[in-house]
Amino acid sequence: MDEQFNADVLIEALPYLRRFNGKIIVIKYGGAAMINEGVRQSVIQDLILMQQVGMKPVLVHGGGPEIDRMLKKLNKEAVFVEGLRYTDDETMEIVQMVLAGKVNKDLVELFSRAGGKAIGICGSDGGLFIGKRLRKNGQDLGLVGDIQTVNTEMIRTLLDNGIIPVVASIALRGDEEGGFYNVNADTAAGSLAIALKAEKLILLTDVPGVMEDKTDLGTLIREMDVQMAKTLMKKGVIKAGMIPKVEGCLQALAQGVSAAHIVDGRSPHSLLVELFTDTGMGTMIR
Ligand code: ARG
Image (cartoon, rainbow, N blue to C red; front, top):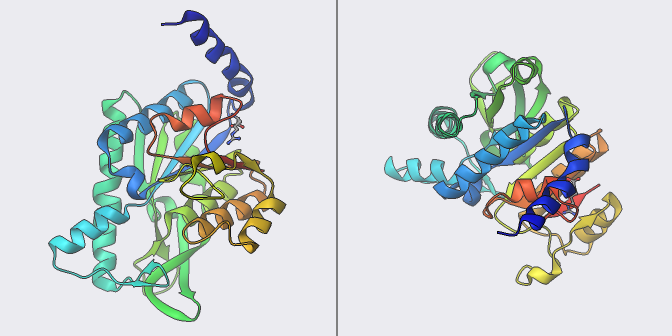
């Protein structure tokens, strides 16, 4: 062990510990990055550490792979339209069970095992998310929604009491029919970061960040401004699954969030490296 190195790491963290004290950080976690149990534990530890040093982390999660697994068990086919899950009534019921019932509670269980205090909620708790029906390029997606209103009262109560909120990405239907909408977790995290006036929005994904060439880690873009992000989208360097993520980041930045980060959630403690070192390890957009 190199003691001097350890000391250097802590000293490098000092300005960030100071700067982010008391600040709300919204972290989105989901997809393939969430499958591995060991990695999941390291993400949870990172959030507990963040809270311990005075930050206010909020975790928003999806759970696509778990939903697919359950659909398969029930012999129900997963249907995607324009890259989004077509959600009929029965699928919505399964999404609710898996996200709010299983994935959410499993994450909370990991927190308690690691000595943290977390409470798992979904969009209906405290009227957190009210949605409206989403159509993509005029196509019907069933019960897929976009978030229309965010009521942050419940989240603030939890944060003020030293509790980490763990939020499943489903929203209330804001109409007489009632029930739920399935909402994209990246979008939900973005809307929540805006409503909470968060310092940061961090998307934990299963790629190292925005890269000019997906196969070459050397082309990772560590930092960019909004203009550059827009240019890269126009040029097609930012493409496919990365587009909605970057768009979500840009929206958050346009509405008061100071920085948005796209970080590899598969790499252990990537959150800590991103937050508490100068170079970070993913892509930061400002
Ligand atoms: N730790 C600092 C922050 O969170 C800097 C992070 C830099 N990260 C990057 N990908 N360039 O603000």
